[in-house]
Image 1 (cartoon, rainbow, N blue to C red):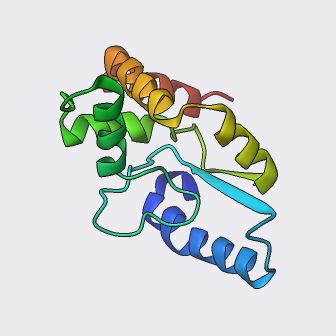
Image 2: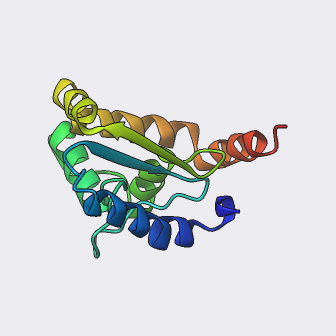
Length: 140
Protein backbone atom coordinates (compact mmCIF):
# COMPACT_ATOMS: atom_id res chain seq x y z
CA UNK A 1 0.00 0.00 0.00
CA UNK A 2 1.24 3.48 -0.85
CA UNK A 3 -0.48 4.92 2.23
CA UNK A 4 2.46 3.97 4.47
CA UNK A 5 5.26 4.66 1.97
CA UNK A 6 5.55 8.41 1.41
CA UNK A 7 9.15 8.16 0.17
CA UNK A 8 8.08 5.75 -2.58
CA UNK A 9 4.96 7.80 -3.34
CA UNK A 10 6.73 11.15 -3.52
CA UNK A 11 9.84 9.88 -5.27
CA UNK A 12 9.66 7.16 -7.92
CA UNK A 13 5.86 7.18 -8.35
CA UNK A 14 5.69 10.93 -8.89
CA UNK A 15 8.79 10.78 -11.10
CA UNK A 16 7.03 8.25 -13.33
CA UNK A 17 3.93 10.43 -13.45
CA UNK A 18 5.93 13.55 -14.30
CA UNK A 19 7.86 11.64 -16.98
CA UNK A 20 4.58 10.50 -18.54
CA UNK A 21 3.19 14.03 -18.61
CA UNK A 22 6.41 15.37 -20.14
CA UNK A 23 6.62 12.51 -22.68
CA UNK A 24 3.06 13.28 -23.77
CA UNK A 25 4.03 16.96 -24.01
CA UNK A 26 1.05 17.70 -21.77
CA UNK A 27 2.69 20.05 -19.24
CA UNK A 28 0.60 22.95 -20.56
CA UNK A 29 -2.61 20.90 -20.26
CA UNK A 30 -2.21 18.87 -17.07
CA UNK A 31 -1.51 19.82 -13.46
CA UNK A 32 -0.99 17.27 -10.70
CA UNK A 33 -1.11 17.72 -6.93
CA UNK A 34 0.19 15.13 -4.44
CA UNK A 35 -1.67 14.23 -1.23
CA UNK A 36 -0.58 11.58 1.27
CA UNK A 37 -1.24 10.65 4.94
CA UNK A 38 2.47 11.10 5.72
CA UNK A 39 3.06 14.15 3.50
CA UNK A 40 6.25 16.10 4.25
CA UNK A 41 6.80 19.72 3.22
CA UNK A 42 9.94 20.14 1.07
CA UNK A 43 12.79 21.67 3.09
CA UNK A 44 14.01 23.92 0.30
CA UNK A 45 17.42 22.30 -0.13
CA UNK A 46 16.32 20.27 -3.14
CA UNK A 47 13.71 20.68 -5.86
CA UNK A 48 10.44 19.59 -4.21
CA UNK A 49 9.28 18.03 -7.44
CA UNK A 50 6.29 17.92 -9.64
CA UNK A 51 2.97 18.27 -7.80
CA UNK A 52 4.40 19.06 -4.37
CA UNK A 53 3.84 21.73 -1.71
CA UNK A 54 5.92 24.90 -1.70
CA UNK A 55 9.14 24.69 0.33
CA UNK A 56 9.60 25.84 3.93
CA UNK A 57 11.64 28.93 2.87
CA UNK A 58 8.95 29.96 0.36
CA UNK A 59 6.17 29.51 2.95
CA UNK A 60 8.15 31.50 5.55
CA UNK A 61 8.71 34.31 3.05
CA UNK A 62 4.98 34.49 2.35
CA UNK A 63 4.18 34.57 6.08
CA UNK A 64 6.68 37.42 6.54
CA UNK A 65 5.18 39.32 3.60
CA UNK A 66 1.67 38.91 4.97
CA UNK A 67 2.64 39.82 8.51
CA UNK A 68 5.01 42.64 7.57
CA UNK A 69 7.80 41.23 9.70
CA UNK A 70 9.72 38.16 10.72
CA UNK A 71 7.91 34.83 10.78
CA UNK A 72 7.27 33.79 14.39
CA UNK A 73 6.82 30.13 13.43
CA UNK A 74 9.79 27.76 13.58
CA UNK A 75 10.81 25.78 10.49
CA UNK A 76 9.19 22.71 12.09
CA UNK A 77 5.90 24.55 12.59
CA UNK A 78 5.92 25.88 9.01
CA UNK A 79 6.74 22.38 7.75
CA UNK A 80 3.87 20.92 9.78
CA UNK A 81 1.47 23.61 8.56
CA UNK A 82 2.48 22.95 4.96
CA UNK A 83 2.28 19.18 5.37
CA UNK A 84 -1.19 19.22 6.94
CA UNK A 85 -2.50 21.02 3.87
CA UNK A 86 -1.52 17.98 1.80
CA UNK A 87 -2.43 15.15 4.16
CA UNK A 88 -5.32 12.87 3.31
CA UNK A 89 -6.44 9.49 4.68
CA UNK A 90 -5.04 7.74 1.60
CA UNK A 91 -2.41 8.46 -1.05
CA UNK A 92 -4.21 10.57 -3.63
CA UNK A 93 -3.41 12.17 -6.97
CA UNK A 94 -5.38 15.22 -7.98
CA UNK A 95 -5.07 15.60 -11.74
CA UNK A 96 -6.51 18.85 -13.06
CA UNK A 97 -6.55 20.74 -16.28
CA UNK A 98 -3.74 23.29 -16.20
CA UNK A 99 -6.11 26.09 -17.23
CA UNK A 100 -8.24 25.36 -14.15
CA UNK A 101 -5.17 25.60 -11.93
CA UNK A 102 -4.11 28.87 -13.58
CA UNK A 103 -7.60 30.35 -13.09
CA UNK A 104 -7.63 29.34 -9.43
CA UNK A 105 -4.12 30.74 -8.87
CA UNK A 106 -5.05 34.05 -10.50
CA UNK A 107 -8.10 34.48 -8.23
CA UNK A 108 -6.40 33.92 -4.90
CA UNK A 109 -3.81 35.70 -2.83
CA UNK A 110 -1.37 32.80 -2.43
CA UNK A 111 0.73 34.25 0.41
CA UNK A 112 -2.43 35.16 2.34
CA UNK A 113 -4.00 31.73 1.76
CA UNK A 114 -0.98 29.74 2.95
CA UNK A 115 -0.39 32.07 5.91
CA UNK A 116 -4.01 31.74 7.06
CA UNK A 117 -3.96 27.97 6.58
CA UNK A 118 -0.74 27.54 8.58
CA UNK A 119 -2.05 29.78 11.37
CA UNK A 120 -5.30 27.80 11.55
CA UNK A 121 -3.53 24.45 11.50
CA UNK A 122 -1.14 25.55 14.27
CA UNK A 123 -4.16 26.63 16.37
CA UNK A 124 -5.75 23.20 15.95
CA UNK A 125 -2.47 21.46 16.71
CA UNK A 126 -0.67 18.51 15.16
CA UNK A 127 -1.85 16.05 17.83
CA UNK A 128 -5.54 16.75 17.11
CA UNK A 129 -4.96 16.72 13.34
CA UNK A 130 -3.06 13.41 13.59
CA UNK A 131 -5.81 11.86 15.72
CA UNK A 132 -8.48 12.96 13.24
CA UNK A 133 -6.46 11.70 10.26
CA UNK A 134 -5.90 8.31 11.92
CA UNK A 135 -9.61 8.05 12.70
CA UNK A 136 -10.46 8.74 9.05
CA UNK A 137 -7.90 6.19 7.85
CA UNK A 138 -9.69 3.45 9.81
CA UNK A 139 -13.21 4.21 8.57
CA UNK A 140 -14.78 1.39 6.65
